[in-house]
Image 1 (spheres, rainbow, N blue to C red):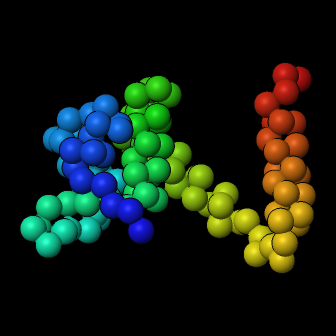
Image 2 (cartoon, rainbow, N blue to C red):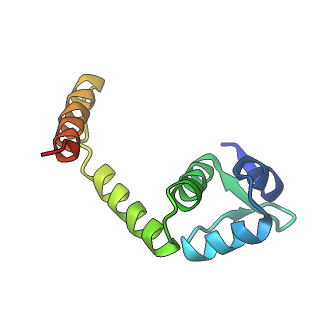
Length: 107
C-alpha cells in the first residue's frame, strides 16, 4: 500500500500542515508513523481528506456540518449489500440513485 508524507498530502490538498493537523484532530484521523516518527497517510485516508476539503472549502460546510455529512455518507455505504457480483451492486446503486433523484425533483 502506498503512503503519502505530510508534504505530499498538503500539496495534493492545497492546505498547510497546521490545517492537516487540525483536521486529524477534528475528524479523528489517525495516520501511521514511519520509522522516523513522521506522519504518513494511506490512499484511503488521502481520499477521506480530499472529501473533507471539498465539504469545507467547496461546499462551505462548517466542521460540525462536514462531520455530520461524513456520518450520513458512511451510513449510506454501510447499507451497500454484500453483492455476489457486479450486476447486483449496479442494480442496487441504480435504485439508490433513482430514489435520490426523486427527492431532488421540484414538486
